[in-house]
Amino acid sequence: MENLQVELEHTIGFSSSIPQSVIQHPTDPKSYIYIGGSVIIINDIEDSHNQKFLRGHDNTISSFTLSNNGNYIATGQFGENADIYLWDYNKMLFRFEEHEKGVDSLSFSHDSKLLASIGNSIDRRLLIWNVETGDLVAGCALPKTTIAENKILVSFGGMVRDIKRRETDKYLLATCSSSQIILWSLDPFKGILEYEKVNIGSFIREYTCIQFDLFGEYLYLGSTSGDLSFVQVKHKRLFSNPLKICSSGVLSLCNTQDNKLLIGGGDGTLSLFDGENVIKKSKISKCGGIISLSKFSNEFIICGTDIGEIYKINNNDFNDFKIISRNHSKEILAIDFPYQVSDKFATISKGSDVLYWDINNYFPETECKLTNNNNGLLNNNNYPTCCSFIKNDISILLIGMMDGSIRAVDCENGELLWILPNAHRNAVTRISTSYNNKFIVSGGQEGDIRIYSLSSRQLVCTFKEHSSFITEIIIMKDDVHVLSSCKDKTIFCWDLRNERRVAAFIHKVGTVNGFILGNDQETIISIGSDRNVTFWDIGSDTPFKVICYSKKYEPKCITKSNLDDSLFAIFGNDGFINIYSFKNGELLISLNCEGQYFNQLKFSPDDKQLIAVGENHILLFNVYL
Image 1: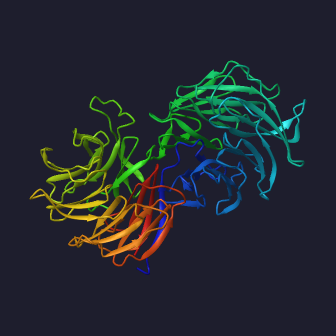
Image 2: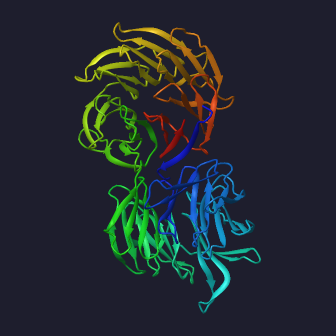
Image 3: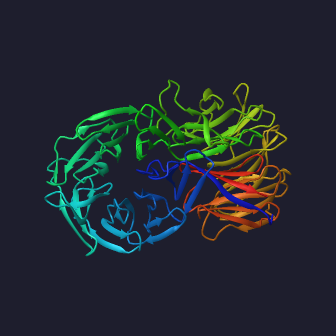
């Protein structure tokens, strides 16, 4: 194992809940950039295999922007150390550590010399940074307000103009929240920020995005009400008659080169506004809202939706578009490979969708949106929790649900094949299929283990000795014995032929978060809240080896290589994926995930890749033995 190498090959999915999380490079038509969790990913539109990663954040990225000349990237993050990172395309240049609790918004000046950052509603500070030197140019606390603020936005608007509309040497900025709109004047040489509040009268909106026109004469504001508001900069006045644009809110704004305005709607529409009227409108996404908008010259537009899609749109014809990337919109809970197939895998998410992926192009071949029996959407409390492919049919995926049902999906065409209702009284937490393809074993939230005939879908037998949440189920190769682990700190071995428990492996303290079984069908390796990695022989109830994972952090999920017992991998809440030797438990490699959280790890059947899923991101690592 001295020659083991693991490298991040590809990441799928961007932070689709963060505004402007996908941005087209302004000078390179092949490059677009997005944020995924705590990582910045530079992508090639023409080659999905070509990705570059900028890593350094220790928490999830909360805000993201790109300079107008394309030379700089700025990102802010959530958390106590709400720092701002300034990057070029190869490395981090500066780390600014002034904000506390969170960074809500970032904006580069039109000449790419300055960066404006604004903290969240707790921090409430506007700071201006020199991009070349990393120095703080100016800073000011926002005026106090009595109305609660969900999010504060900032945008540069060129230079302040005098009474004859000539540019001065002062920069123009705007900040806005639900309670106030403020226009700022910055003297970069003296480090002075001056402001004037815009008269909004009794007009209240929850603003989602702001954008100056190219000449700094008007400030446009999109809101959750689906309308576009206007501020005339010269008179510091908000027009009282906003223009209705779309339903489900205006989520993004972007200028065109001829001073028109692109508007992304929460209903999936893209609109073009000429300053007076909407002159063009097209439905881009069937289900998602356009949360990110950017463009390259007069050629094409890149937009990202809040359900994980990225589209490339013809600038001259909004009906001419194609999807270039796709992912889940909500947290990904589980992954499985078809039996002995290494270039396809399926994932499920809290968004109640199933995606069947092709590793060759990192794009889903099919999608299945899980609904209830009358084709209505599932409620937020019912979503898939676990999945397992049937071994004699590489396309049929069994899915456990929060409502206690088990569903079968044909991943080749995305069709729902059948539903087994009330398979468990509460949530199905684990599911596994037999090698002879005659039965399935499922575990529930209350600790019950149930065996169902696969052909008739009838209950065969039930075991109820666990007392809590089932965390893992493994069917042994003889199709007679089954291992199950539980939050009640136990691992049980069941004899299906005689319908009884034949062995027990008990952690001294805490829960069992998961376990793996060696190809010899004798070695069990378990992890739990005792923060240990415990090795068992199936013939003994006493562990023969215990390794301390961490004194502070807990291992959360575990997987092993398939072809031989050479490796196993663990992800813990320390934010690392640790890869060990199966033979002796030696730690071989630690992969820093920079604050990202994963729900499951899985080696491909050929052991050439390790895939991690969680939040709304999929990470694919190449494994070289």
